[in-house]
Length: 235
Figure 1: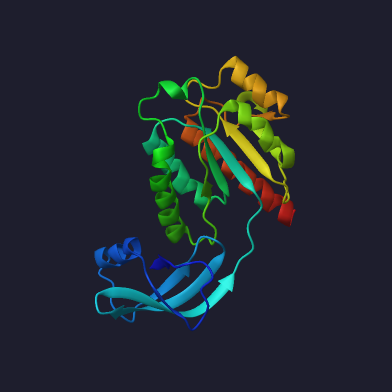
Figure 2: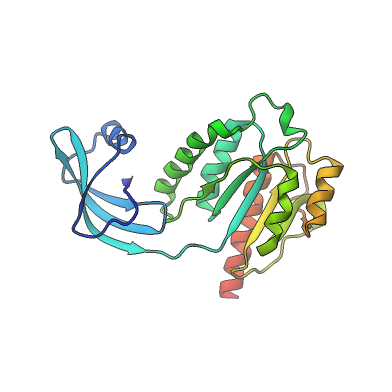
C-alpha cells in the first residue's frame, strides 16, 4: 500500500495524512503498524508505518530517497470526453509523462462531455492514484486547457510531434531532449489548426496503421517516446 505525504518529509518525522488518504486507508481496512510506501508526487520514494492518533491516521517516516525529475514529456491532447481523458491521465503517469495539457479545438468544443477547467482537480486525483499503483516518483502536471494559438510556445524547448497517420514513424532512439506530442480530438484538427502546429516546427509522426481515438493516440505517443528513450540510453 502507498500513501501520499507532503513534499519535503524526512526520515524520523511523523505526518498526519489528509482526508483523501485517510478515507483510502479506511476502505482498505488498514491497521496501525502496517508498512506503507510513501510518495509526494515530486520525486520522493519512501517507506513508513501507519499509526492511529485518536481517529487520525498518521505515518511515521522511516526512509526517504529523492529521484531526479524524468526528461520532459508533454502530451497536448484534444479536450474530448472527460471520462476517456481521465483514463489517459492514469496511463500517462505509468509511461513517464511529465505534463498533460488539454487542447481546446473547434471539434472538441462540440463535445458536451469535454474536459473543462473545472474538471482539473478530479483529473489530478486520478493521476495521483495511478502513481500509487505504478510505483513512479513523479506525478504528471495537469495543466489548464489551452487553444491552438498557444501551441507555438511548446516548440521553444521541445522536439514537437503532431500525431498524423500520414507522418513518419517515431524516432528509433531519443535521449533526454524534451518532447511534446500534439494529439487532435475525435475527427482530428481542422486544416487551420494543423497549419498552426506545423508552422511551430512540429514533425508529423504516425502512431499506427489505423485511425486512433484521442486517448489511444496519446498513450501510443507516450509509449513511443518511452521506448525510444530506453533504446537511446542502452543502445
